[in-house]
Length: 395
Image (spheres, one colour):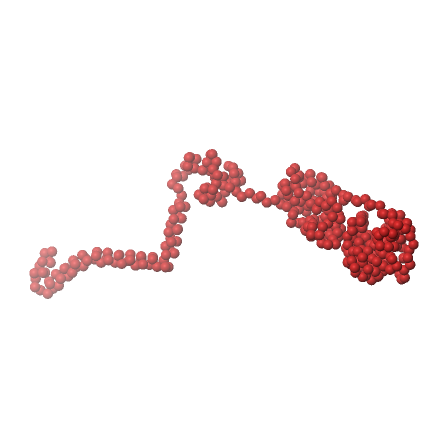
């Protein structure tokens, strides 16, 4: 300080320079803190501007989320090894009902939201509701459906689907094979057997024993993965059999005027065609008292033809025991009738030629096997004064 005063009072140039330098040094050291504070304020402003730009906002949000997650996942401050008492504020979580169960403490329980929906037991246990599978394995999807059309027969429908007529009979709880109605919906099982609905007390073993089949066949047919049956479950029992189809007792054929088949046979010109086409057919029953025609047996669906040219006076179903049938008017007062067809292929009023197909072999009406009953009438069939004669007279 003494030197500063001496330099200030000394007039030499060097002394004056030293005095000026001392003065400037003091003023600079005093202004430095002010300049540093200003720089810090400007830096904070620049950082704020950067943080509020569009690019910085997502980054800022992510940082906030990460910080919050870190706080929530931080371990509690409980001392290591301290016993966790089950006090008034603690709960034990059991999934699906019951402590110690296979799913107890299942990590699928998500916490507060699930706990709110869970039911609390008296001991503080929370039971998380679990969805129960109430679906029933059923074989309904295996069943096919058919809508009866005009001209259909039970045997014809069954053959179309490759099952027996009895299988269709049992599946639809039928009482008469001739009771089909146009528009009726029939259930068609996939194989020969029965379709049943499980009743209370039924088991695989009891069903197998009652129907004389194997439990393994039931499991395989219905693709069962659970052998515990459920009431209302629909099952197909392959190879099972129901009650036999009732056999109708044919009514005695009315005795016709003229001896009921013993009258004269009008002559005709030309040969007659055999009523059934193809080989393998044979006469299964000949003309005799009470049976005024011949039965010609053949495979189901074999064509039936007109023996000679004529006019169709009836084609369709009749409840006279003959099922589906065709009547032809020939010449010289002769008529023919053909019964038990599985299908009729002509219509009433149609003219047909000799050998033209009029239907197909079946077993409709009162019939015990696939065949056609062929009759020759003198006079209108079933009319007053008409009678039948042995068809073999014309062959």
